[in-house]
Length: 218
Ligand code: SAM
Image (cartoon, rainbow, N blue to C red; front, side, top):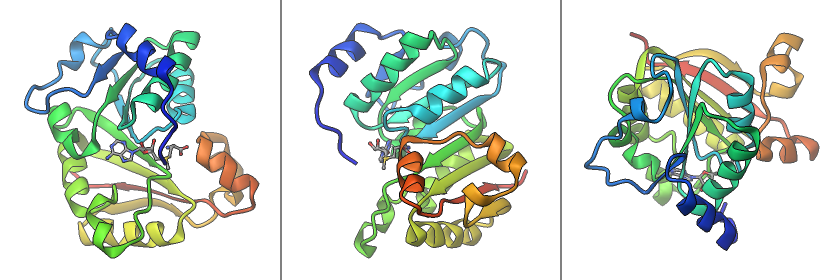
């Protein structure tokens, strides 16, 4: 999904270096302890948050955790920032960069969860390496996650879901939760689910939402 360029969003990002790290040099590690009031809190990362409905809701709901929105597009980063500022979410940082460098942006074993929500499906075989559940990405998530840290993945795309199950299984990951119709799961699952923009749109059209939680073991 490519968002139309919004000059206000780019300007806002440039005005708030305390909240957004803009395309950092992957050879320089980011000192996250300078970015959060208490780095000992669990750190959770969303890769590709888009406009940020999910990650800003999470940051509001769980003030005892730290969150990072890792987003490629500057316009999307600006939209997340606007919500962060309006809701005064001091536990949310925005990182404008490519998830291909996630293991450079974060030190090893720093995060307890990585969320992949409605990632671009890249259906053509020749684009397989761009899928965020391709083995090279899984390897980087494993480095960044703590022991027993989880990847939580949601999508409306059956092809990407099947591919991701296979890719994670081949990588030796353990599945802690799998659903092929998340919105018709039992009440406690529904109560814990935070919708994303894409999820809201696709579910309203009557499409099933696929979801999984998986870990790399210890
Ligand atoms: N997660 C949101 C949702 O569910 O509503 C947005 C989904 S949108 C289809 C995918 C998002 O992932 C876009 O905002 C895109 O810029 C971002 N994205 C794609 N590849 C990325 C990458 N390699 N690193 C960081 N963000 C990426």
